[in-house]
Image (cartoon, rainbow, N blue to C red):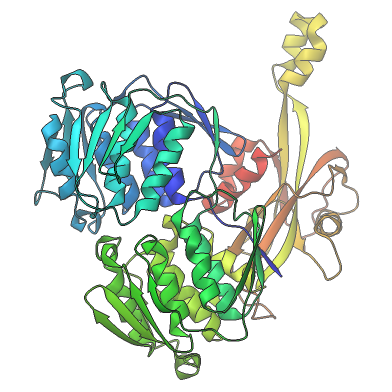
Length: 594
């Protein structure tokens, strides 16, 4: 049974960042999603005066007393959630700031939110058509806003409502939010309110979400853990059913706060068996993939595309309802899905916002040999790329590089799941296990002797304080003479730790004496081989490297020109001179655990 780990929730990561940024004291966020969307939001909040500090693998958010626009120019990429929250934050960001994104972001409508904000006294000047970014926002100051009452429709975007709720506890008189229509994506608003509870924000829901009254005041919980992303969870859930591969999602969670968790019901409709055990979720696929029949995705539209590719190879007709919001996402997702499915020969029909799909369990036979002629346009939308990746993975014999080339803008997955492609390769057992060794030694800093002479009675304390860590890196004749930590493949029957010890001797010689600090890996990273990298086993498309820690004791590194051609001892801040950026980013996470 495959063990699968999910990235942190995008929805909750965005909300937690904003709440931490306006809190009364710092908050440590655990399990925060690392993605393009979060990077853009962090950049905006930094421009508003928020400070961030790494605490091991966690992030400490240090809020200013007040957020200030500082006449900054803020780029938000194609981050829909982050951009909507930022626009709503104009209620509590004093001064002026500009917000812009990629061209697609400038096509996404903000009119309802902008119209709702203007009566408060926030000045909003759109540079193109009114109701669209780029736009300049000017807040005269919290005490000068004309009203704390905002009215907005609920059926355009639940994120508009959430953005207003997130800003509310920092407003001078709180917020009275009038909602004029039904909220289709109500689980997302409920998620926001539960998070307000965690930050000790007081509020009242009037009627059937006709009005939400939020009081002024917010108190940090000190620490907050981000659960796994349930939109992302739909991908391995569907992959399991489509590939007939039982899986266990290790970090599925217990209280996810996310409506997309209900995608498990769709998986059961397709014939799979679901079992929950604490944080874990087990999936056992059925013998066949059943048609889904008529299904309503109004409360979880972000996973409807995953349902569509599942239906594409189901045995019968599936009918998808509740898709209205898909037209104004990162792209027109209805159009993108229908276009891609038609390209692969899947029969579809669209009636307004209803999509009918006639499944074909044998569809892979029709195009599995035509990788050079087929192209699927993701429209730079991560969820479109995810869904067609798992479809092609399960119905063709193409390797990941071929699938990557078939999907236009396949790299857009970094928006919410940067490791998606290597994770998918791992699910398919196509990453070679590799062990690496981080060898460190301590050496006195140049100031040690002088300090010892000045303060001989403090020698013990100074010795610990002044020693600096050096790390051994080697230069290999493979991979364009790249610098890396000593590492090599894990043979059959070996543990990662055993392989690390063997490889170290083979690469650096038996004269180098080190002491391993336990048999547990510090962490790992994965990468895919370049397209021109030839291996004897073509099914292996990348490597999964686990690192182990060892302390230098004695001896010299052997340089023989076969395993390594050079070596150096360098400090952590010097590693950037030897490692390529991607490798350095990965290895820094490993070093944080030391």
